[in-house]
Length: 423
Image (cartoon, rainbow, N blue to C red; front, side, top):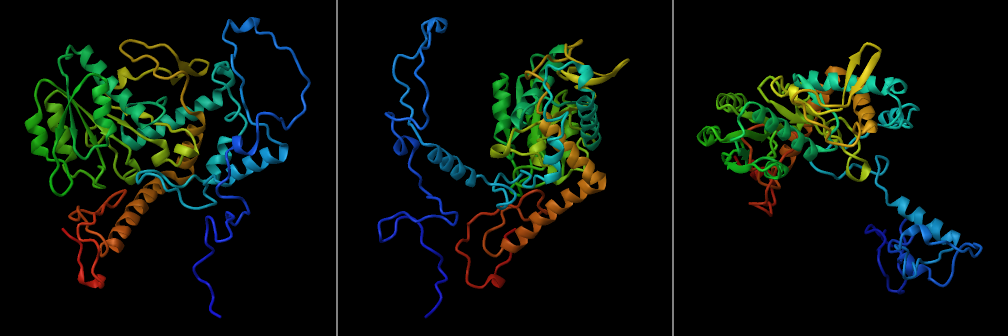
């Protein structure tokens, strides 16, 4: 008798009963409203009279109709839901290509330390000096890694950071009497949030085409420049997985035209510790801590998107921010001069700050560079290994954080040796 190597079938079998998973839990559990009913309760509570005088006429007019469950039914339901959680113990994170998939246990342990996990944003500043010191150190290293003059920690995600960066650009141009600049250049290889952010702030978006090799057409950038152009929003490395080889020339042309260079830093994990974006001449760039510095993202927790600013935009950084005062670290809560005001309720995501700084300090400068180099190596390895199965649309350059493929010659011939990557 041969061994069944097909695995156990799932779903409804010939017996008519739904099969179970390896955890002996039904994969398709009925809804709670189907398990329980509204006529019974799983707990015994005394009848009480509830006054509605304080509800101002907004009390419920119809029954709540919650399903009554027994304690074992409720427990089994929530245990089943917990088994659906995906974690580092279960497998790799199937998230976006530019997202860090690894959330080290050390980071989680540090974020749960007393003093970080149990502080409140309204505590007196004198009682949270350690948290402020952590924010100060994180700010220092973000500016060091990017060679920039200021950083705003508070944005909650990349799109929020983009909004802040473009708000700073708009404030700088308004202060300089350049309010007539209403056009933002956005390459076709940019992230989709870039044109959305520009349009949200009232700018007109002008698309910049890319070469067939996936890089920005520099001449098209120069041809699009005019006294009405406020900025360019360029993703680097770009969405094709490529580092823009002419980024210095693009920055120089933008600045010569009196505009600003906003860089989408979503893919910074491919160049951290190797390239400082401030060196080529960016003016603002958001850094997704969840994409580059291992903090959870999406279903795993909140994001964080600090924005670094050049010397030209530093005076417009929003509050709050940390600075050293006569009696220790203090939070600047009110905008001074041309600075932007508050863009979020409090100080941002403290848990994400702790995880990101832990990741930085545990790696060191050389370790961060090695992590970026390993990410690039892995992407190029995948590119080489799958070149026989798919077309490689942008094969002229080494890929960065990701490798892109298409199926223009799919299905592949039987012999992979007969195929070379398409150039």
